[in-house]
Image 1 (cartoon, rainbow over the protein chains, first blue to last red):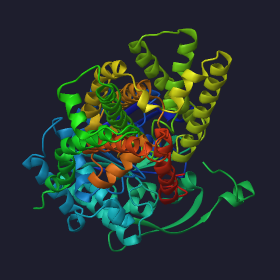
Image 2: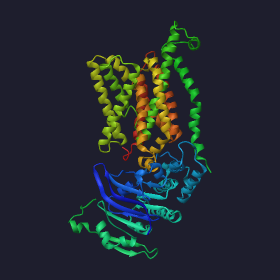
Image 3: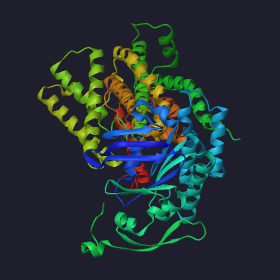
Length: 275
Length: 339
C-alpha cells in the first residue's frame, strides 16, 4: 500500500456563512497524481484551497505526512507544499525572472541576495517550464499560456514535494493545456512530486492521473483509477450526463468522446441544478 | 547569466544616492523664495549667526525652514502610507486621502478641540493617529461587508463618501462650537503655519513609522503578488497586514497632526515611483519617501507664486496635479474587471 502524503479528517470548509462541504475524509497517495473532478460548485476548488491552507477550515484536520498541519509553521509548510491558484494576478510590470525568484521566499533568510542554490533552482524551474526564453519580459507582455507556465515555474522554484494546482489549464488553448499537463507529468515522474489538481476536462484528468476523486455537492462520490471513474454510471451520477466512453488506442486511457445531458429529461427543463 | 538583481537596483540606487543633493537644493529653493524678498547673504547669516532681533532671520529660522522640513516630512509620510496601502490591498486607488484615513484624523482632532481644548502636542499626534485608524476602519469595514466592496473604484467611492461625511460632521460641530477658524487649518493644510515645536515632536513618530515601513517592505512585495500566493510562500499574512496598518496610521496620523489634510500625494507618488523603480517595495518605499517629500516641498514653493504675493493653499496645488492623474489612472487601469 502506498502511504498517504496528505490526509484530511472530518474536514469542514467554506466561505464565511456558507459551508461548502463538511466532515470530509480524504487521503492523497505519495508520489501520485490525483485529480479532483466534479461539476461547478461541487467543492473541488474549496477542498484544494483548504488542503493548501489558503482557506482556513471550519473544522477537522489536515495531515501532512501524518503530521497535523496546524502544528507546523507556515514557512515550513511552504517548503513542502506549493499551490498555484486559479487566476493569479501579478503586478504587470513584474519581470518573469523576478516573479519566479519569489518562489524562493520560503527558503531565504529575511535579508540577503539569492544564493547560488537559489539561482540554480530558478534556472531549473525556467528550463523545465520552457520559460527561459522570455525571462526578461514583463508579465504584461505574455500570452495566457506563457503566463501560466511562468506561474508554474514560480511554484516549482519553491522546490516542494507536493504541488497543488487549481484548474491549471483553464483559458489555455489545446496545445498549451497539454504542455502544462506534460510538465506536471514530468515533475511527477522525474522528481517524485506528489500532485493534486482540479481539472474540468475529464479526458485530461483520466490521461494524466493515477487516481481520480469525483465530487458532487460537497460529497466525495467515489475515488478510483481513471478506468473506474470514467465509467457510464459514475459520470451519470456525478455530472448528470450520458457519456460514451472508449479507450484511446494511443495511450490506453479512457476517453469520453461524446455525451448528452440528462438534466432535461429528469427535471423537465434545462435550468436545473447549477451547483 | 543575466543578473536580474543588479539591473533592477540601478535606478533606485541612483535616486537614493542623489537624494541628499536634491533635498538640500529643495530646502535652499524653498527658503530663498517667499512673499518677502530676502537676499542670499542674509539667509546665510540667519543660518550661521542667528540674530533673534533680526526680522529676516526670524522669518528664515522660525517660518521658512520649519515649513520646508514639514513639507519634506509630510510628503514622505503620505507617499509611504500610499505605497503600503496600494501594495497591501493591490488597489491602485488606495491612498490616505481617498480611503478616509486623513479625514478620520481631522475628524478626531475636531472632536478633541471641542471637548478637550488646550491638548498638548503629543496628545494631538496620538489622537490624530487614532483618527486615522478610525477612518481606515470605517472605510475598510464597509468595504468588507458590501458585495465586491473592496474593488478599487468601489472602495474609493466608499472612502470618499465616508470622508465627506466625517468632514461634514466636523464642519457642523465646528460651526456649532464656534471653532471654525481653528478647524479650517486641518482641512486646508496651512503648511506655512506649521508649529516648529510639534515638528520636532513629530520626528520620533515619523521615524518609528519609517523603520516599520522599511522592515515590512519585502513582505509587502510578497503581499502585492496576492493574498493566496503570500500564504503559499509561507508568509504570515495577517501579521504583515496588522503591522502595515499600524505603519500607515502612524505616518498619516503624524502628517495630519503636522499640517492638516493634503490630498493626492499618497495616491500619485507611489505610482510615479513604481513606474521608475519597478515593483519591489524594498525600493518603492524609500524612493516614494524621497520623491514624495521633494514633490510636496516643490508644490509648497509653487503655492507662493500662483497668486503672488498671496499664498495659495497647498492642497489646491496638489489637486491641480492630482486630479488629472486620478482620472488618468481610472482611464488606463479601471477596466471592467478591476472596477
